[in-house]
Structures are given as C-alpha cells and as structure tokens.
Amino acid sequence: MTKRTILLHPDPRLKAVCDPVDAFDKDLRALADDMLETMYDAPGIGLAAPQVGVMNRMLVMDCVKDDLAAAEPMVLINPRVIDASTDLNVYDEGCLSIPDQYAEVERPARVKVEWSDLDGKTVQKEFDGLWATCVQHEIDHLNGKLFIDYLKPLKRQMITRKMQKLKREIARGL
Ligand code: NI
Image 1 (tube, rainbow, N blue to C red):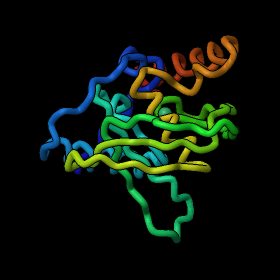
Image 2 (cartoon, protein in one colour):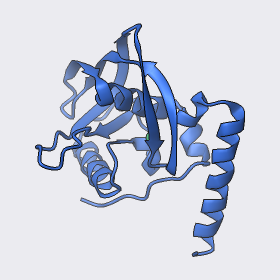
Image 3 (cartoon, helix red, strand yellow):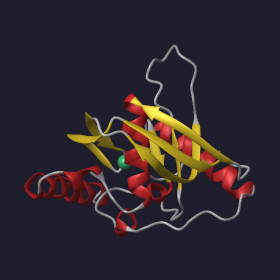
Image 4 (cartoon, helix red, strand yellow):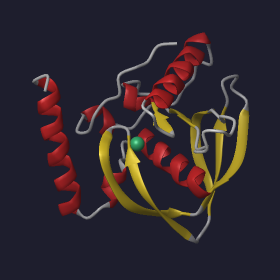
C-alpha cells in the first residue's frame, strides 16, 4: 500500500466530472487500498479518487469515529444516489482537500445509494447520520463539486483565498 498525495483546492482536477470505472482488476484493488491508507493517515472519514488525481468514479469512507470500535472501511465504485429523504440534516463539513476549513452544509438526512463493489457486483444500501452526509459529500467530488460550492459566494471566496495562500506557503516550503 502506498500513501498518495491529496490535491488541495483550488485545482482544476477537483472541478472535473470523473469517468465511470469499467475495469474491475487488481489495479483497482491497489488504488482502493492506497486510498484507504491515505484517508486513515490524514486522518479523514472519506476520500474520493479525484482528490488523489485519479479521475474515476470511486470513493472510500469509514465514518466510525469511536477509536475502540471496529473499522468499517467501504469502497464504492460508480456510486449514485437512487433515493433521498425530504428531511434534511446540517453538518459542519470539512474536506481533506480544504484543510482546517469547516462550514455548515444542509443535505438530505438519509440517502439510498447504489454502487459496484471491487468485484463489479451491484450493492445497495441506505445511509443515515454522518454516513449519509459523507457519502453525498464524496459523490459530489466525482462530479467536480466541493462542499464550499454550497456556501454563499463571499464565504466561498474567503476560503479559496486562504487556500491559495496556504498553497503558496507550501510551494515556498514554509
Ligand atoms: Ni471532500
């Protein structure tokens, strides 16, 4: 397993619509392992392939926050929301591509998602709570959408300017 570099906003690869996965091979398994390692190391609860520069429709997540509970790593390939509750939930969201920036985002409280597993088998599951927020946030990544795109323009620009500054500092090795 190899830890991958997480792209930071702003980056054109984080604004692009990703392509469906069509080859369920050992390379895909290796990518899933790398993405899980990268996510746990960050640490984060979700990571989408474009965040590591792979422009395919795939995400990993594990929303178990209790350190004493067993990990629940999930790999979702070509995921799509097939049903969403009308009642909404608000979470203070963050993103590994937008470090240290958080904002409240409103989304459906429960979603039913269909995806393929690593063998190409179709899976359906209903998510609620933090899992529902996370899976919607990660699927958004596959469509080039970030959580800051839900915010008012002024707030979004403020966060983007902070991130541009952070990226300049990283480039200078500060
Ligand atoms: Ni994110």
